[in-house]
Image (cartoon, rainbow, N blue to C red; front, side):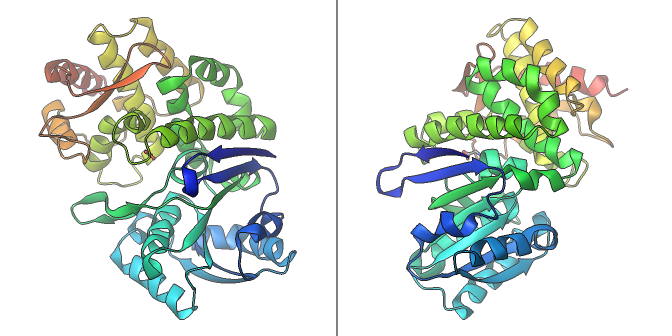
Length: 370
Ligand code: GLY
């Protein structure tokens, strides 16, 4: 079992990473409780696979659990299920001193975190992320929220969890596609700030994807450590935290272009976006010409979507994709913020990117689709 700390003064918390943590959830959560009762919010998929394991883990230390099971999928992350969740928590008489548990992937973590942020003006919550993407990214750092008809994640609050329990044992029930989509975010950490981690992933990625538990724990630990350090420096994204958006400007445009459908999962878009960010960085003379090929080679080795050509169905042209990037919520004064790289592990934030270079990289990528 590994333990990390997100240092945020009075709002500091631990991230516990290991196998079999659901069975130990009672002893791990008990120190946070004023009374032995928690409200768990989850989704149908996770409930069918893991809710009883969580119930018995909590019961082992005498903690009673009530649960709400929401539909699975991104459409849950809107006002309807959000207000249902808040009303249910009130019906369950969850008090200011109680703890709410978000048990699921990114949709559940974001929605339940936001519900906890506003319930009685803020109650504590514990994240038990069940997807790789949620374990290495969305469960850590306190970004919570829901989608609006105007775009994804536009309604929300910063509300840090009190504890994150990342049980890598539950990753065994993910489909290979969902696992690899989450791995897109793991690769992102190596690419943005740690060349040594990226080299480790080049060596160990296939074993990790194949099910090696020790390597999964190490990948989640190193990813969470990097995120914890960045969040501790810049909790509300005034500066460095934007580095975590490497690949995301491209990804958000591609997700919008594919209608947020399962043609492209978020982590798949992040992987393709990282490859594009390195391609543009090389064309701008910021990093070595070999770097984009090295990034793409690793993604291909892992059997991941790597290029625009790997996205099924039609895509709009380069200008339309750039227009979609302009809708991103990270646009400041009409200028698109990009995360570029001076090398592998050396990302930086800039709005000073020649859009003609972006356009020619996208046009070539689109042309390769044949
Ligand atoms: N997922 C990016 C962040 O938490 O800042």
